[in-house]
Length: 233
Image (cartoon, rainbow, N blue to C red; front, side, top):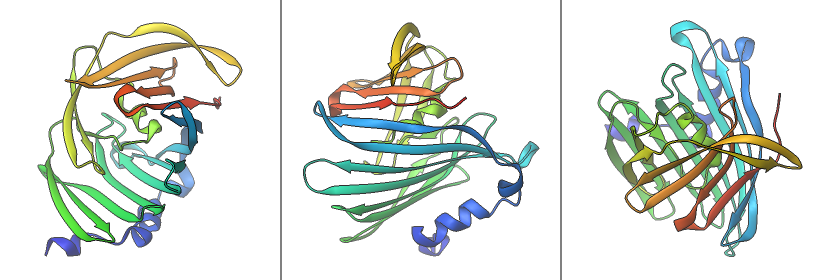
């Protein structure tokens, strides 16, 4: 019975993008741009993303999607994540991911009452999993920098429930006090707010600009760095 609640990602992605009637007529780009990704200190790929707000009032949603090209030395891999969130509190409600290239898999996560239901389809078979839907839950995919946009309003000392679908992890990230720094976005110096999110030894440094746009993400334990190359508006 549970499996029938999901569509293959190839079919579900167009459905999610076109389902809200207001998306085409009232969609507003919140942010878009490109990150250059480095792994182990070497260039590894790019992330081109767009974040849109669609609809009005109680029907409003935020849709974030991207095309990510990576090469970890085992051949090129393409990731196409699509995340839907509630504008009022940035809580994630639906998520889908298609991975192709050196790795091939499809993944979907949906909020269903007090739980998130996940299904992962790989060449080895299908896997189903459930996560507790704690208040304020965000979905942050491993290796997806723009997802940290949904942590831009998190306050110092607060713990945010996070789900990482590909790693099958659920954790709580605690936000540090922000530190003002100047960094470069391409050739442009930009005043930024650096916030460190941590859960035990899992530490993630994120730089936001004054509009909450993600400028840089560093995850030392994974030797991962994503640097913004441009700003829109």
